[in-house]
Amino acid sequence: MKIHESAENYLEMILMLRERIGQVRSIDIVNEMGYTKPSVSIAMKRLRENGYIKMDSDGYITLLDTGLEIATEMYNRHKFLAQFLMAIGVSEDIALADACKIEHDISDESYQCLKKHFDYFKEM
Image (cartoon, rainbow, N blue to C red; front, top):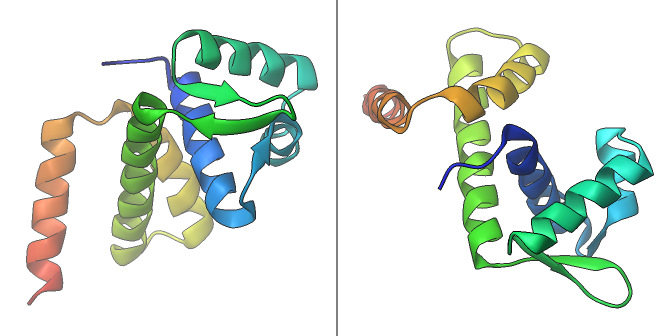
């Protein structure tokens, strides 16, 4: 299932924040991404309505199975692409920024071939 890039970014951020700080609230996303509270609130409402997240009465966000699947895929792509770019000489800051852009647009076929190629040379 293909969703908007912005939704992928939010889901990935929720996963990253969860790994780093444990429980995640909308304000954590606001602080991390630099978006306004209303923008994040609208995005969280859409993610809830589409079955990607749930929020408890205290405002803590939980990724539901579908949301977790998308977030994990984006985060894994991000980490791999950044690692790949740094391995070929791209500076860390640029590699991280570019990985964030590439992860949403690269086809699964190209991504899998890059991984296979990178893993092959890593083992040499």
